[in-house]
Image 1: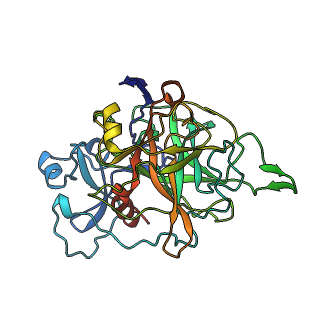
Image 2: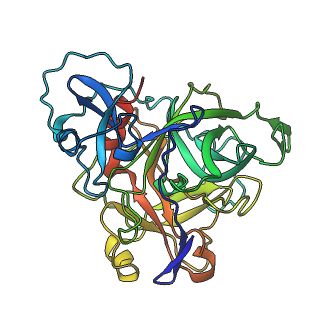
Image 3: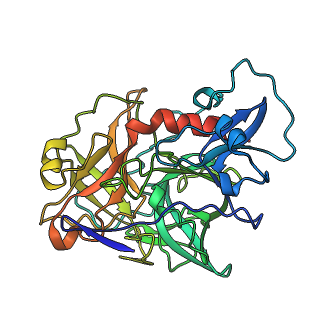
Length: 378
């Protein structure tokens, strides 16, 4: 469904849950504990437990402002675990430390940055992911983009997950190491000869976690963020590497105004296949202040960031769900790319209307990301 608001066109897709076919990835709203047993926060209607009384539901309800029918649904064969936590919905979550890729591995800039280039080098942005969808369990097609942040985790936009009542379209795989969607192997010609990349990696998704507060009823769709857990770890190479996450910043807004950052992709969205070019492309966007963005879109909030919108620079090369990237100093004194934003709204009208793209501001969600990754590693 395409919607128009304040002159900005965007495409929306709601989260879906399908518990019928075991081959489909599990989609839930986080891990939980009830009676010392592990479970997942799921809509009441999706829980395998039958004849759930209202009293049982209220006692085991998961805290969510948007989704009022979420309950802690225990696993069918889950054994009790030791815990000192009590069973209130607010503290039912458990976490364990997770190791993110170090600065020597994440966000590596293999090439000199070309600010105004259009075609990305075959080795640029090796964390770029293509989300793969199936239609009627047969055809794979590419839709949104995403960013590899760990050997088993990809970060994307919540609106890129097909809606619950979409019976034919399913998000099932992630492709990494892609450059040209129409060739295999991928080779780029240089003066000294061609450089060819190894085969891309197609990895099934076995779990999808969307933000609990994401809702299509919220103006400008804040909390548009989702995590995809891969069935197996990817193999890192020069062409497949993670991007760095910024430091967590839950309250204050980092001042990025007038910083020039990169977006890249194939111009894909959740409904448009091959929206721009079969080749990975890139462009640079200047970040707007929150006040400037709110003059255009009054409902933009601090957990979002706006960039682009000038008439002399297209901001349509990025994928919906793809990254806004900042090249900055890292902890070891060199430079790395950091994931500042996730494309949320605006790529469909950017060239025609000169409007900025709206991104989910990743620094506001780093603690959420780490918590969900830590509690969903098994």
